[in-house]
Image (cartoon, rainbow, N blue to C red):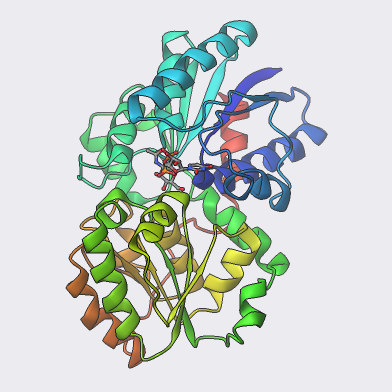
Length: 363
Ligand code: UD1
């Protein structure tokens, strides 16, 4: 029996762990030596719409343990996760801890595991934006520096790890589990109420998500950005499901924009329905640029860098930057139908979790 912990903490983790758990359950049906997994939710995201709904829609079994850490400063959140996960590790003594992505929970749990003598596997290891002003970049750097097994999404990640001196036998190029979730759920997508209420039509509206401090924490910049978007979309509607952090700032702004359709965080199946049928996407997320690449939907990233360069070189993504005026030529390009055609990166084929589980079983 191989004993492993799987860590999930924040919204973008859930679509990455779901396929791994399903692959473990499938593997255990026939394997002589089964994988005994324990799913641990750190509680970093705790709103129903940011967490529980994803478990339900993606058929992810209930976590065995919820550390219930909640929000806080980077240090408070990290410290709370570490203290609570340390107890959980001491109690169960897993052989391997699987962390995914780049959120605070990823870094905090990898440090605890490593110090307790538990091997660490990092799913989505090796990617870098080069922007150390983002907490996610620090999380990636710290996690990768103590990772024993890297499960990578791209050739660029493999190169980064090689450059950092990691031995090739520790690096497994497997593809993208987020895309496993995407491809596995395309038949199950759900039309959200906002579609009917606003009479939305395929390829005639945009979707936008913003939650990075660089875009939403300065009120004046946020106002300018929303005004520019509102007036440069040819009167098309922009569906804007808001992260709680963004909502706080938006409420203080106290303004209305006639082309923006504001809504709360959306469930996975409804959100992907909207993205798949959209004319284009505006975002500061990293994961969404992978999904739009696979769906072939034009995407504008409101950041100065990306840790997922293949979404630009191969996919439909463009790096717009954080200066609000930068977006105008990109919106023009989209509206006039001149966006580039994209392709799909290697191994983003929906079978990544099976590859990971096969490797984990053989470790
Ligand atoms: C985290 C990740 C980020 C990811 C994002 C997706 C880190 C460093 N960042 O950022 O990479 O793109 O999740 O959503 O881990 N809040 C709620 N309810 C919740 C969760 C958060 O109201 O369920 C509010 C709280 O006011 C909290 C704030 O959102 O202080 C920020 O949450 P936090 O978990 O610190 O980071 P995110 O900005 O969500």
